[in-house]
Length: 174
Image 1: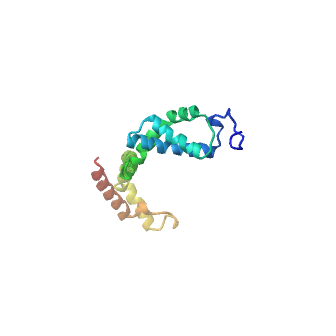
Image 2: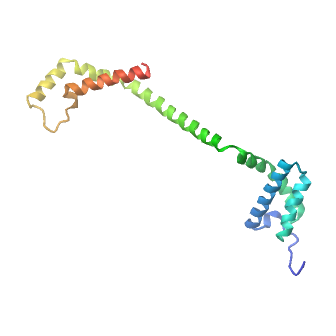
């Protein structure tokens, strides 16, 4: 019993409640920031943490807290570094990642489009053939079903697509 309270003397850091651990971790981080920015010693930083623990009346062996503090220093270092990084670097990194992703997708689509040129050449050969002229005449005479989609039988449809294809191929470099 200490000051009318029953203390558990065999408690370790891991036995603390999560809320207590969170408080202590925050105090440790604040002490680490002071250690780095003000150049205080490890012992002085640790003393700041222990003072907060005593004020909060949390009982935990000092050696447990010291062990935890020393083990968390690398995390604190990374966290401090992340907090001091200008936001624009994260924003520019996001733009870079998105741009690379979009370029990869575009390159893939361009590859697929170039591979499809054989089919477009097949359509162009049909458009310039006697067969197309006969199919066109059949459509003009009303011999094809009225519900039939006729884009391939319109003179402008194929011609415009072929011209657009040439322009696109010139833009992407054959």
